[in-house]
Length: 151
Image 1 (cartoon, helix red, strand yellow):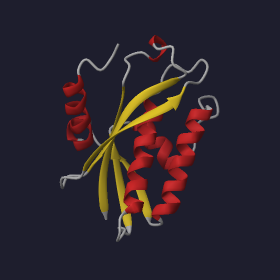
Image 2 (image 1 turned 90 degrees about the horizontal axis):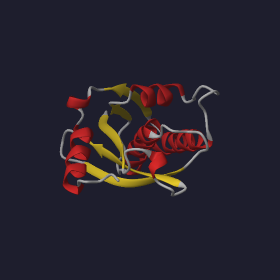
Image 3 (image 1 turned 45 degrees about the vertical axis):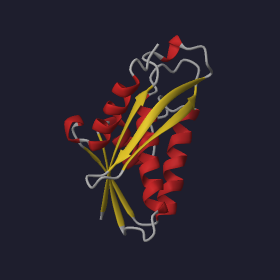
Image 4 (image 1 turned 180 degrees about the vertical axis):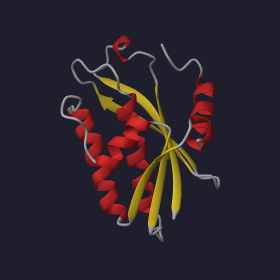
């Protein structure tokens, strides 16, 4: 079994502070053996949606599954650990409550579905506390190097 950890963060403290039609963020994927990756991501703004962090967290989870699927040879199973209980629940359920669901959520879920198919093995999602998340520590160090990273 392969184990990966994920985390996400905004480039802006408050998404309504930017006039851009999208929200910028960063995602991190890491393991406990030295693998570490940080990538920039962009999510199109959705009218009346003010909280994007859970979508970024779900995108990080999907990216971890995608990366595991690109390995050769692939592991037969994958455990993805996140410090976002909301994103973990969405990933486990494969759906989001209709009253919360937006096109941005749908896109992130579809990305995860596609990555799971590509991986082909068993994928499980788990919660890990922030202080035990190597991806969280990696992202925190990255953001500190860039400080100030918000407007």
